[in-house]
Amino acid sequence: MKCIYCNKEKEKELFNIEHVLPRMLGTFQENLTIKGHVCKNCNSVIFSSLESRFKEDSEEGIFWQMYNLNDTYQVRIREEFTKTSFMAGLGDDFFNDIFPFFKYKDGEHCIKFVDQIKIKNYCKDGYLILLIDNLKKIRGSSRFKKLIQNLEGTKNKDVSIFVGGQNDKDRSKLDEATSLLKELGIDYKEKKGKFTGLEGIEGKEFRISVNQNIGSYVARFLAKISFNYFSYCAFQSEMGHILFHDNFFSIKDYILGKKDLPTKEVVISIQQEPIIYDEKIARKRLVGHTIVFYKFNGEILSQISFLGKKIYTVNLGKIPEELNKDNFGCGHFFYPFNQKFSGMSQNPNKWNNGVQEGFGLFKSY
Ligand SMILES: [Zn+2]
Image (cartoon, rainbow, N blue to C red; front, side, top):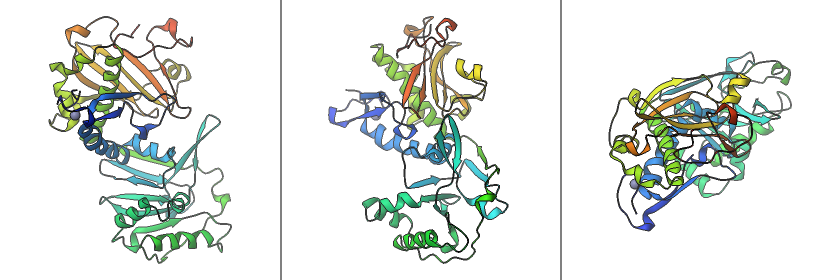
């Protein structure tokens, strides 16, 4: 057994199941996995840390956390390469520190307010958001104990609480948050408090601004998902051996962090224009994930996009001669809100006719 990333031969027990799309980007009715071809070290040690960096420090990762589909109790924002700023539209800068969440309802993505505790100084410039209702559910658990350890040394000035209330005298949720903080080892003392009525929210627009410079962690993460998808298709075509071709050594070493490449050589372009038929027709991006690969000028390029945000073009390397056929390529769209995915075709006759293309290396018709 040989790992498709580090190329090392290892015993069977040293292999893990690798999800083509990490579970942090949603789970699907059928989860695409690569079994017995990615070793535990690559999967759990190297890729896990890439995933958390992506989640905490990329535009897509941060938006994904705003949807909170996994119903977690904490959001972590690193602010190293990606800066967030919010305008709550509530007439006072005080409320701009509120972290917005999204809900998906009747085809619309709208902002929702969640009772929260914000803790600054996470990884120097970043912050943590603790979701109060979910935090209550894990009281006393090992995760709660771990959080106490992580929050050790938190200063009062770095803590803010944002909760809903009936009126400016209603302190019930505020008191509840304060006692939760006490259980977490933080003796919270209120310095400044403000109240705004719901009438302040109506008709107001919550503005979100996220500025991203893609760092090498994000580029490695994008390259990994592209290569995962390409590998999955190679196995479906019963051509797993191609993954050990010399042409892919460079991108694999880059993904593993063993080799440094200029980010621009890996992520060769970033664009916003839709690539999917339905998006072009609707003139808007679909809030889902797109992955495709194809050949261009003798290279294998992959385009990847999460939650209808930027489209990254990743260069996976020169195309091996064995794959250099006209119908080389494959593409899928993943929709995390109904857990479904569907194949994509470049043939206009197949657009919108419900025909499903499967996975494979030669599905570009
Ligand atoms: Zn490995």
